[in-house]
Image (cartoon, rainbow, N blue to C red; front, top):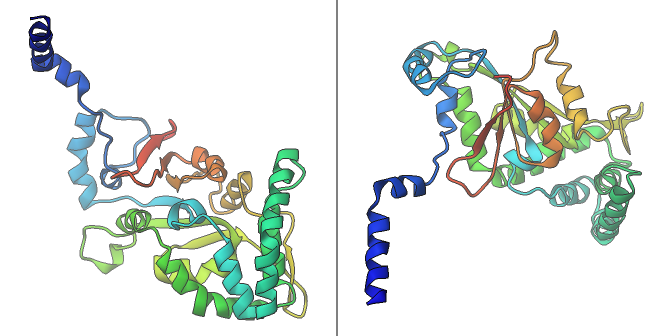
Length: 288
């Protein structure tokens, strides 16, 4: 009898519409709806944004979008496969085997250096030195175009690429108004390795990455150009400030790694990509 009463109370509790409403899963707005929303100086109510969305589709405004390569545009966050290919194609088999043998040690040293806060990205500096030291800069450009581009395309994250594609195309058939947004990509990889792939195959306008040090004979020394060094963290913001002058900031930022937080918080709207969900989460930092 007690079991029957408990079962009846359970059915009554589930039949309560208020309880079902409370249990309803929260739905996040779609990222695709953001591109159709007009730029505004403050947050508007859902009713006002929906009423103006149709007008924004016919007269879209130019936006600036910044995307991270390592943690957003590419699926793999490891840089080792690309530097291994670079050392093999532009260097020699012996160079690539040396890189393969000592990279675990470089990772271990980088871990302890990060704990001691005495160095930044020691493993990436090791990859750059072994892969580029003594190799002509023009040869690295050729390998990046002929070899690395194919592997970057295979590693391209389709979901992020779709967001950028939706941002760079409009609903109008006029080819002159097709490109409505400026797309910038920031990365800790050497710029020469990714620039051709990003500009020719992804369609970005400019790339900000680590600059290699080259001597007067056009040969890479294996070091990075100072004072920027490895482009990560706040250095990404410093690089972007060369484009966004007079107090202007990016409209949208896409990223998912810890080194992306400075430029994401610096932008008006940031989209924190959590892969595996149906749609990435959009965060607003109060500047939009």
